[in-house]
Image 1 (cartoon, rainbow over the protein chains, first blue to last red):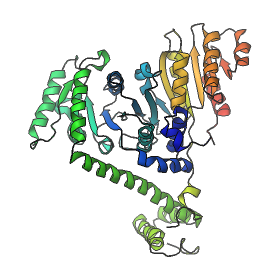
Image 2: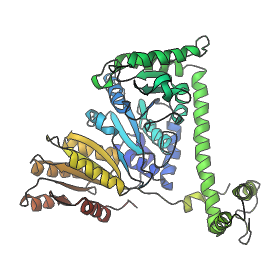
Image 3: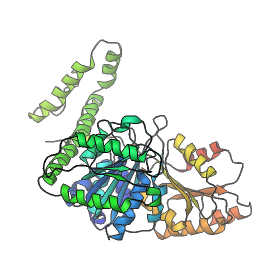
Image 4: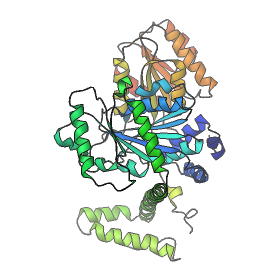
Length: 330
Length: 148
């Protein structure tokens, strides 16, 4: 079954689901569809939700979705869970908390496995978001995999980033020292009915107050919620809306779009260049001998990489031969 | 640039990394999900991406989820005695949505007499209590291939 851009633009669920699958599985034909969809993207508001495993991200996403639906917004959800490094399998369980939306045609939920990608997202996340965007979803929620301190890829993807913390994860807020602290547009202290919630909240507020914020610059609010009982979520949505207005104002939106464009291009370029280099080496039977040389320390990977880059790409860009000669040894 | 056509182009040599995706869920009213969780875990260990939907799913929810997640198979655990309704209903909805190629299998407390009827309605395989986990994994491996 081939999926067409037209089906996606018409909001066809089956076609979109299949295209997402092909993109996740890196099927080249799927990229062709994405090419014609690309100019139809950029309309959705992208909201990232990140935080430690078990901090309540899925439950929060579920509540936010309900509130958005009440306002008549259509919602796409990309929920990411980890792939087992041993078996390549995964249990994608974020939907458990979102099944109240399973019959709502205005909500499209897609579970993704990280498949070894670091940074809190799957490699395919941007592609999947683009498909949902082209489908016409008003808001796209991205729930990252449960993160530690440094998985902050979401910051370049979302207009607004919610960082979810819970009480009792250590003094001095270990988990949010740097990295994750810096990406938050909004902090949520979830499970705020638990002991230590006020302390956690104060610590984050203290930390924020140590930063310098210029006139009109966004200062992250800290909001207590109990997502399980839907407490504090309406207040959270007010802040989300406030930040959306800020994020879509100039110069912020122009900067966001440029940064996102950079990430998109560089990520795709990186993947393609590696594929190209590896396939060049393989098609000339050079990869295995090179690896053998490296294993015996007869060559070093730095020099090889430099030569591969020079030969594979520079020659072609300069109008040279498409492939290096067969006998050529690096 | 002649990247799209060349013999060694990325498009021509890219190897697809197809994964099998299976929905594991519990329709109906009984709240015992231990079996479903064990199956989910065993399939994960077999390299499958398992979409686990949890308890109290209606056939409509299961089929909608299967559509959005583009799964190859659906495994249902039913201990409530409502299997003669739930399995055929899921099958019917799958066919309605032109998803008849999704492999439906399941298990639970299901009397031997009911099994042929369920198979006739399009359920691919029914497992009964006492089945070894490995048997289910082997069944899934043999029956559900990654899409071409």
